[in-house]
Image (cartoon, helix red, strand yellow):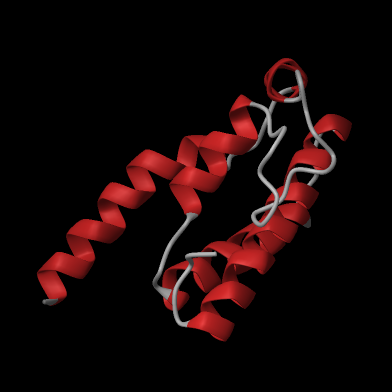
Length: 111
């Protein structure tokens, strides 16, 4: 069981870390094309490509994984960022907070 958790964590890190990284001005600008301020975990209509991929990649049923991702993003937000990255990280944090709250309330990330 421990080997499975380790394998899962490594695969998740390789798959998802490109979605949560330090963004250059150019990368942040690219991710903000078609950005929807109303996009959230519970209201995904209108999400742009980046937002949709992020939600799909980070929808986790394991509270521990979602919580550790949230803690990582909170630490990342305290690092110096280009201005456009701040908008992305703020959205990521609020989305992960919503995922964590959903898992705590329902025991699953399913809405």
